[in-house]
Amino acid sequence: MASAASGWSSTSTTSPSSSSTCGEVLFEHRTALDVPELGAEGTLDAVARLVHQALAAAATRGAVPVGLTVAVPGLVRSGDGVATYAPNLGWHDVAVLDGLRARVDLDCPIRVENDANLSAIAEWAMGPEARTPTSST
Image (tube, rainbow, N blue to C red; front, side):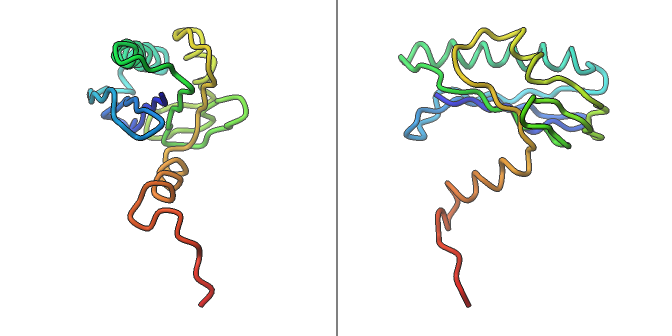
């Protein structure tokens, strides 16, 4: 099972989802968050609650988590999971990875990445032209 929380903006919709390795959706939920009002800690609390819901839903289907990926709209140091600058969120140097590890007990990798980069990877992997080799014209 892979989970993702994505789409944070000033007033944002957080969309955690979990899916099987075959792409079957096991959990999907949208919730609006006022990230500037909640602040980083409140936002991480809300995301952790949604991740727990996704994990519970997946467990009822016998799914075991293999990773959690969090998409952040801003500059992200992927190595340590810090959102160095996310202007739409009002975040500077927020330790997203450490914050989620403190809130969610998972025995699998957690990654924090830039949302646009993850969108590009998803389009490459799952879009209508998925895995199409680059033409040399």
